[in-house]
Length: 189
Image (tube, rainbow, N blue to C red; front, side, top):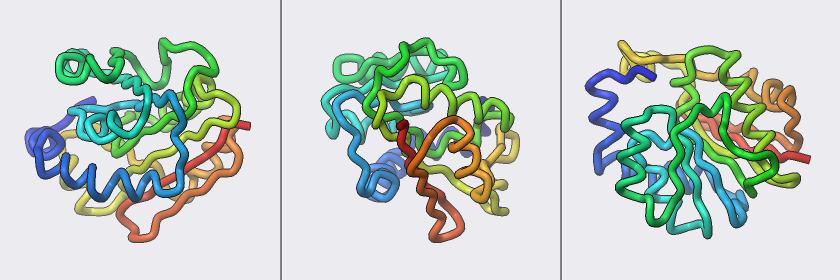
């Protein structure tokens, strides 16, 4: 996962953490029951993790970047389990989590095939009846400019329901009300 200087600075800022806690997570998770054991895929610098850890009984975070995973473990290891690993090949058991979430990270997954493997892995580690929910940006010029020099592969809004269904999910809801962000929720039958 490549991130340019501006993007790293933005995602590690208190301003971003406040936006996540006050706006992004409440909007992304509106009406979603997370349950007792939540997995966050791709916590990055940890803004989402910080906001989630007080909302759920048990939180596991899976981070692909080894240094970020170590930093998250140091900062949150007493309250969340942090694992270094790839969301497209999770080192986690089947049917383990009541919910799986990811926020503003899918566009950093380099290929559509890897994104589809991540969706399949989210399905695999969810308990029956569990929900996969999250949000991400959609392609537009400003979003692209923030990512110059980054891995940049936003999921097309129109294809997300079909791709989640291909992973096995049902009760799929995808919303893109402002044309800048999309959120989804889908249930494992």
